[in-house]
Length: 338
Image 1 (cartoon, rainbow, N blue to C red):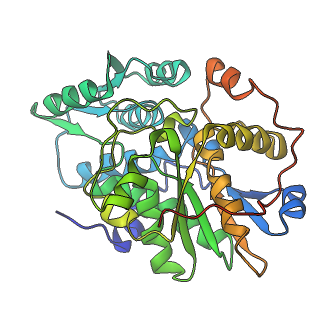
Image 2: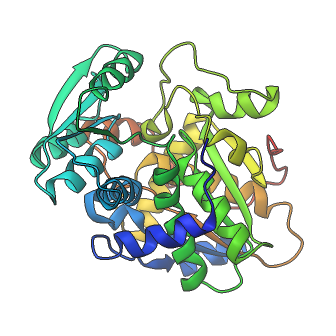
């Protein structure tokens, strides 16, 4: 099994540089005042296709072309952001694409996937979509781009943190969501190479906490039923054999309940004036619990991983108004899984 290295991330940065945006890092002076620390946000929600996923998809496709593969069709399974990323990446080179997904895919993400020219095949369960793409990948000339469990995908996602550490000096911690673990794995590799003292911390919905269970039990655990969470971008049934050994080395890992996911989605949309997915906002729960244990001023960065939300999800997020409860550090912080 090929292990991903920082050299792979550097190569990915060069490979994808002409196709992606170097997203800005922004901050909220009001939030910083309330929390007593500096919190910055890497705006991958403004990336092409609205999420960081384009980086891994492009790196995998471009590397396959470099290696001389004659790609006749690109296939992938995804609940949304990865589907859009793969469809867009393949459309740049006029390569036909088929995406396999569960029927509960976000409508806006499904529409965007279609708009990039991909065929979308839907199945009752995510596992059925995964089985179907595995069969399709056996066809001659088919390139399978997994959402996270692939060295080239991990290397592509690691370019986010490589950029952060150039854009923002003296970062104490970088926070991101964890679904399958591709972003967390790539972030860890980039941070260890460029800024070894920077902590890398991930967050996961409590309602879909397969990664947290895996970390507790010491082996990959799989959800027994589909996760019902606002953070649909982190609702993967299990991490992969490439990502699991890396997320075991993270500096912290927090589980986030649905109330906190809605709370931070509302507040970040309000403070930053950006369309931010619940999966992205979830990481702020880890931030405030981490900061509550810090005795000195901290400078941390949150990766806003995506900004694709449909109307139904927005209605769920705003069922209760959380904006009358100003953000602050908890008096008693939750313990990290790690």
